[in-house]
Length: 139
Length: 119
Image (tube, rainbow over all chains, first blue to last red):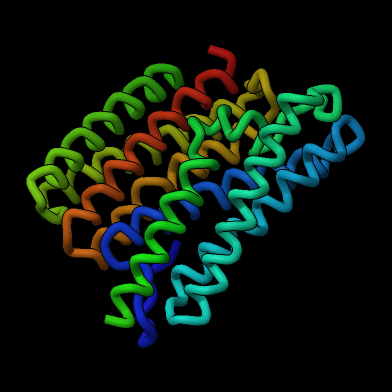
């Protein structure tokens, strides 16, 4: 989220800035939401709240990697975005097939419908952006 | 008072989003006038934060819980300034796109705030 002055290949130039912004928003959303729910009503839907917390941590790591920049961070971010995409798809499908496992919704329920599908669109655009960043770096 | 501020902030946020979206469409970075616009929206958010806290101090109870209410107030307050600083570092159209996105996010937060307070 914050402005940095790094020497390694910048990942937050151009469209990357927008990605960092949305990831930052998702970090705040997922982490604060799950922290509140775990602190106050964890027993009601432990699986949902734990999943939201995991999602928050993954978002936090991706945000950090994007801001940090450089090839290692780029690869780490790419891996996490793939994991995130898998998470959204698995949890999204799971909530459709077996709604009873989720008494309360998570960030990733119904492919992130409660968040205007940003959770499923974000990793797709991030993966695209990270691939292009590598192509630009090797050129 | 709070509802009026929520509405005003939400509308102002959408206007800011449209304005910066227009700048992005014309391939321009955020300029001084945009920053004045961001300042106006941020001032509204600050006023909302203050009024919200005063309402709480006077014994008002948000329908969906005080913690959530305060968290959303703080989020609404931080939203546009953060994107503004990010757009300072990115002097291309993408800085404008980011501020436009912040305006949309803030408008969504305002809708949620309205629900949380129980309007």
